[in-house]
Amino acid sequence: MRILPVLAALALAATACREAGETTITAPPGPKPAPAITPALSIGCMTPFLSTATRAELAAAFGVGNVVQQTVDGPEGERIGVTVLYPNDPKKRAELVFADDAAGAGFTGVTVTGADSEWSGPSGMKLGDPVDAVERANGGVFTISGFGWDYGGYVADWKGGQLQEAAPGCRTVVRFASGQDGDTGKVTGEKGHQSDSVGMRTAMPKIVRFGITWETALPQ
Image 1 (spheres, one colour):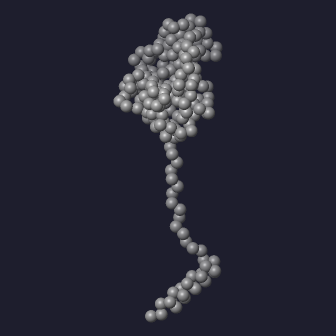
Image 2 (spheres, helix red, strand yellow):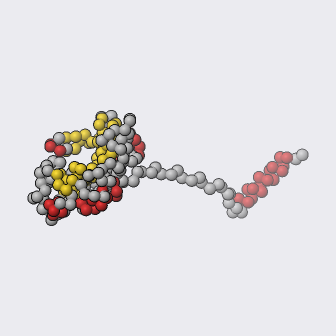
Image 3 (cartoon, one colour):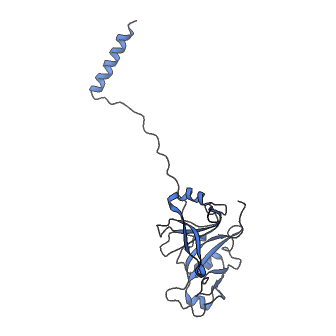
C-alpha cells in the first residue's frame, strides 16, 4: 500500500484549503470563573457577624485589604482597639470589637456611624431614621438614656420588643441624637426616658449609630 503518497496528498489538500481562505474551527472558550461574592452591607445576628466570627474569616469575606486594626476614641476618654471594615470608605466603614483583639477572636459586636453610611441594620434600619420608625420595627416603645453625656442617647431597654434579642444572646444596639431642631432640655442626663414621651418627641431623635452586640458568646 502506498500510504506515504496518500498522506502527502492530504497535507497538500489541507494547505490549499487554508490558502483559499478557509478558517480553522476552534472550540469556544470555557466559562470565566465566578467573582467572589462580598457580603451585603447588612448588619444582623447572622453570617458573617455570628459570635463565632474571627478576624481572619471576615478578611476572607470582605477582602484582606478591607479589614484592618485601628485604635479609636471610646467613651470617657478611653482609647480602644477595634477592627475596621472598609477603613478608607466612609460609606462602608464599620467597627468590630473582639474580646481578644490581638488574636481577632471572641467577636462581640459591630456598629456603624456616619451620615453617608450605606449599611442597613436589624429590620432594615438606617442611620438618620426617626424614633417612631424604630418603635414600629420594635413593635412598641422603648427606653432611651438622656442626652448630653458619654452614653447618652443609647437605647437602654427594648421593653421586650422585637429588637431586644433577634437571636439568643444577640442584642440590637441603637444610639440617637436630637434632630436638627430638637430641644433636649427635658431629656438630658443619665435618667432613662420613654421613646414616646413628650420630651423625646420634642427632641426629634434620629439614629446616629446602630449595630449588634453578642452578650452571650456561643461556643468557639
